[in-house]
Image (tube, rainbow, N blue to C red):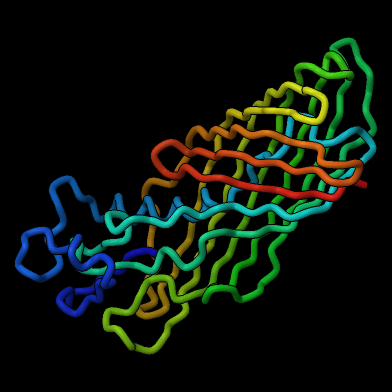
Length: 282
């Protein structure tokens, strides 16, 4: 997933799928990197990418569910596979194992406080909690803890426009062989990655009977820590992401007790992905 700094670059392992791409000068050997390549930039992108891939995006309308009710369900965040241009490091002489899993499932519960009728309309405060236990899957062991708190407002309780604000935060930990060994077949060494995100979103939606299309526009901050076990190196993120994020999706009431949501999530220049959620209403 990320890069390491070694002196013996000639021993580095390049994934078969990226060998032709890495041979930039046609001499049959990987490298050199094309003009404009930045070692630090490649490292920072990878460190940011996996934190952004697990942010606690809305996956709900500005009012997630009626006041005084809750949901329990499962969300799935798609993790886009990275191309060779993002996997190659050390001057295009080594690939990292970024594409271990195509998706990140996360159980999620939420509860809306009893509604309050005010001069600006119906106000519904709410909160959510997501948790992924430390279960090994696809060669990685992850722990993800997420929280959300927000308020939704509906000027017309029967339908029409909704708007609101939300705060979210996520802490994730991954233990896996992330930085690949320099020689194929070398003993596995487990690396340690920690990523955290927090942010604020402004939301707007429009209720049409069972459908509520919505959008969220906000700011998200990323912090990371990455320890490579092979050499005891800590990799610094010199440009942690701190910028805009956009979500656009729809929430649909399937039945009295089932609700679904689908969403596109974008952090410009870093990730464009989709997310799904199915919940039981109680």
